[in-house]
Image 1: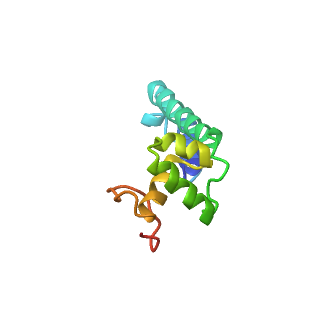
Image 2 (image 1 turned 45 degrees about the horizontal axis):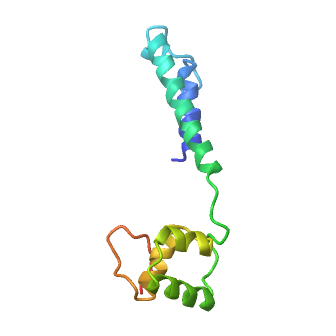
Image 3 (image 1 turned 60 degrees about the vertical axis):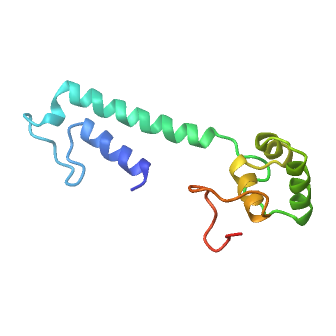
Length: 123
């Protein structure tokens, strides 16, 4: 379920409305209790903040672009020279994870559990 849909359901519940039927919840429903209403609105706001912060994060300029042979050669050279991953990523306009994955593919480092390599793109 997408966060936006979950947030809409939470907002409807906070208004005391059944999200599936659209009927008002009975007066004795826990969804009509002020602490529950405040909690639902707080969760809704937290989900909105989470969505907004994800949208605000800027991607590196070359994120999602294919690596060129020249970039691979350049990466291998700066890696061999001992540069830090963070600096290599900034210089190449890539994320640190993308640089690490490319170094695995180039045989410069070993893969590690949790390194997000795409299926079928193993080194």
